[in-house]
Length: 131
Image (tube, rainbow, N blue to C red):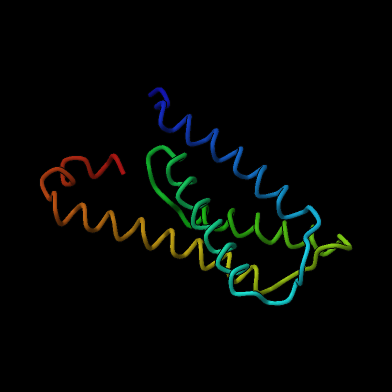
């Protein structure tokens, strides 16, 4: 089965996003590196975004434990790289924020799938293998 245009576009956006987030995660920062709630919200938002992109880039459309584990490994890898940079620091709290974003993304996708089954029971029963 050929890959859909939506899936190909999502994969391209995912790659561009990973390059952008990696770059932003490794460049020098100005200001305090102390625990900042806005910084943690940015981490959670970035990983929520990545989780939704991974779902969109997968065919069939689904989010697996493997996807979530790969996103966590990516986040841990970024933290490891930051530990070696004099202008950055390793942060367990950043990893917690990343995991929160991944969890929110998974919850959002699960909730929307459950809602779709409730609203369109006939449609989803016929197409359950498509998910």
